[in-house]
Each structure stands twice: as C-alpha cells, then as structure tokens.
Image (cartoon, rainbow, N blue to C red; front, side, top):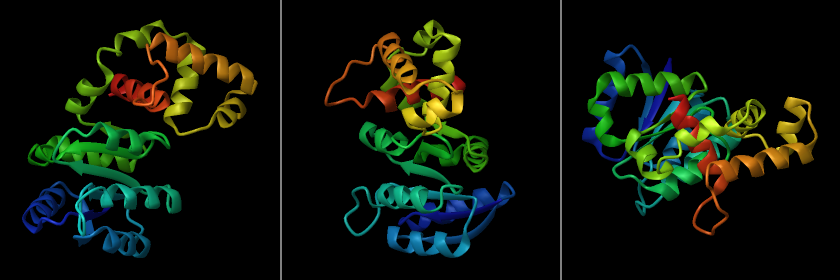
Length: 214
C-alpha cells in the first residue's frame, strides 16, 4: 500500500514514516507544504495521503484545502487528515462530500501504532475513520437515535455517507427524488438535527452514521 505524508514538523513526519514503514506500508513521498503535497500526489498516485490540516505558509487550513483538491481530482485516493485539536468546522468541511475514503485523527493517535495503521488501511479501502474524541464532541448522544431509523432511511443515510446527492441516491435506490427528500427530512428529525447556520445537517447525519459503523 503506497502512502504519501504531508507534515511540516520534520520530527513528527519522520516518526510517522517510521511507524508506517514498520507496519508494512510503502511511503513513496513526503513533504512539508500543501503545494508540494499536490505535486507529490499527482506524480505518485498513492493509495492514501496522510495530511496535516495546518501547514505553511499561514498554518490555517492549507492541508484541508489541498485534501479537497485531491478528492475532486483523484477521488480514488484516500485522505487521512491529522490535527492537533478537535476542530468541528474542519470535520464538517471534510465530510461535506461524503465520508468514503476519508479520515480525521488527532495527532496523538500516531503514537498508537495499531490504531494509526488500521486507520490508514481503512481509508485506503474506501472506508472512513473519525477520532473518537471528535465523535464524542460532535454527535452529542445521537448514536442511539439511529435505532429509530427505518430500513429505507438507513439505506438513504448510507448513500449520503457515500457522498451522493438526492438525485444520485434516487438513481441508486430506484426511488423518486421526492421520496428521497422525505426520507432525508425524516432522518434529520429522528437525529434531532434542526436547520441552523451553525450546523450542516447532512454532515452531522453522516457523522452519526460513521460513528455507529465504527
């Protein structure tokens, strides 16, 4: 499995590379900036890019922006984001296009070798990984609410997690787009996800689904 890693801390990057190689992964490239990451990914076409969210020059969300570009240009490449803190807005942005082939871990998890290696492998297979602290912070007890969903609503939620639009869900499940809209509205209601400017309901529903699946 071929990996590239983008992290501006040389010490942390080298440590992550050593752990990944010891776990049997082939690290085919490393860099310290988002711009270099895009060049590296386009050249190497790895299975997974492990990316720090905050990188030079401004240490804001350069890694996240680069990840969005990778997912748009090369959707088969998995992206595992690393962050020092639980940052809900970054998780929401990462999941807006679906949860398939993406992950978000706190940097402290790198030292947990088995967890880190498992996360990389899962993202490479098109799965999703979310740090348990992120899940605990964001879903606020909504796991149990998933039990109230009907079988069809679960199907719809699974397609939402795959990043499909309502039209795409309708085509996949062979139902009308209006029926999808009704199911989505019902899902939001059962998960207690009101429409507010501070919460992207589709992302939160997907997050609850990913948390339950994990």
